[in-house]
Length: 322
Image 1 (cartoon, helix red, strand yellow):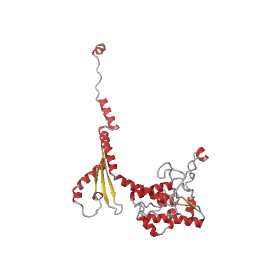
Image 2: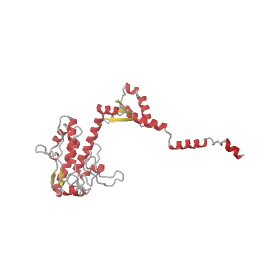
Image 3: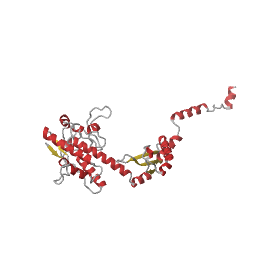
Image 4: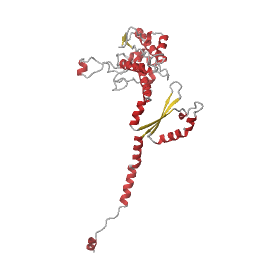
């Protein structure tokens, strides 16, 4: 049994699992530039495998009809994909006048078992027993599977269910998880937001806001700071090598100086290096330097007690003693 879960679905937009490779290639060339052809193939493959399992094993599985935006503006296309992903990944709520929501404070419909999808109530435990689709869906960049990234304890390596959150990427943790198809969409959503954050950090408005808060920023396009040999260096880069070496040394001893490197996602080279001077941290460190630490203050107090002059005895008291 297959459940349709896409509020954006219409008759003109088929499921990704139903389109051919040529259509997926065309979709990857338009809209969101961060939704690559490989990611589309993984998404389509996940939908096909979930539907196959529903047919063969007679298991109730979701049908997540996520369809990428085809907006001409890449930035707006990614924004639309992010908004659509949030709506598709939002945990299912009970009806507003449901007695369980009013009297038991049970707001969400699937919030009792970490082996149940919080969106559609799919029994993930049954899916894993029949065919672990988490181990079949891989990240096109790292090659790691969803099982490796989200269903294993990072310390012990033991299997551990992924815990969904009320706000998808934020909010309180729930007693629920995501099915393989929803989890892959969650993985793509996190990547899109990270890429958008990197681009937003480079906007002039962000720099102006930082300057207003007392942060000075120097942005220099340089590749040799990372120590990677990328060929002949520009004369200006050679000229400032000693400057960057001194900055790197000072950054290790002060929190007021930080260096950030922005690599090219295609070539892997360092395209931009940002140097930040934080005046607030400089002032804080200066105050800490001027104030003695507790141990040194104790030594000063002890010395003050030793060097204190002895109390003088009045002359009248001395005559009385004689």
